[in-house]
Length: 213
Image (cartoon, rainbow, N blue to C red; front, side, top):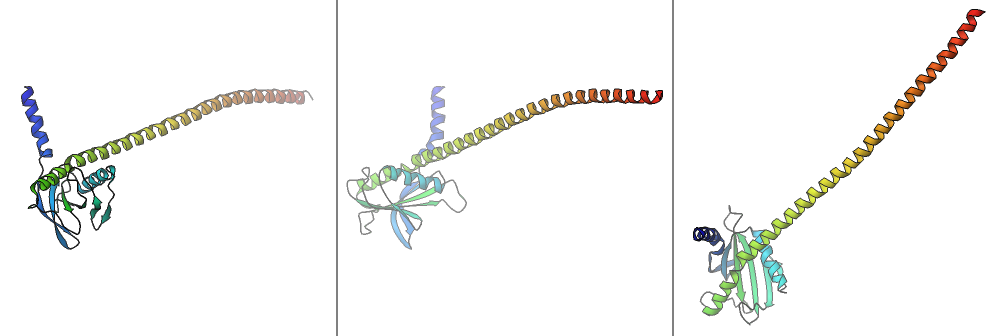
């Protein structure tokens, strides 16, 4: 039974681990550049942010340039000891798909000497292996976004609760004041009734004097 459960879990996980990945061409700045093309099962914004954040965490500074992330003169240990120029361009897969990204990862030794699929096999394999990180990076970024959204939802719910509690306290104070006002009003009514009774008695005394005249 455990083996069946493990197999089912692995079957569900495999679509996330197995990516369409191959050497192709990247259209950028009206030119075509050889690049590793990797499909990632996350939207473009998530995938782009994931790659950019990871590069930033590694101390790699780049810039956004005409729809791509450009990194000049950087070293990526997993690829090799050389210094490279890297261009990362993320597009959505097709016109209708918003949940799948296509990442073009172009690596150059400088002077637009971009590495192709027919170059050093070991280097090509290292680049492909490195771009295999994009899916887990994007999945992690998606989770971070979901966590942030949920934290915001919790904060919003907590704020609403605080507002309701403040309103409850305000209503309780108003209720107490109203009850005090009702009591005070009741006392004033009794005083006024006594006053009326006294005035009537005074009136009766005056009337009795008139009848005796």
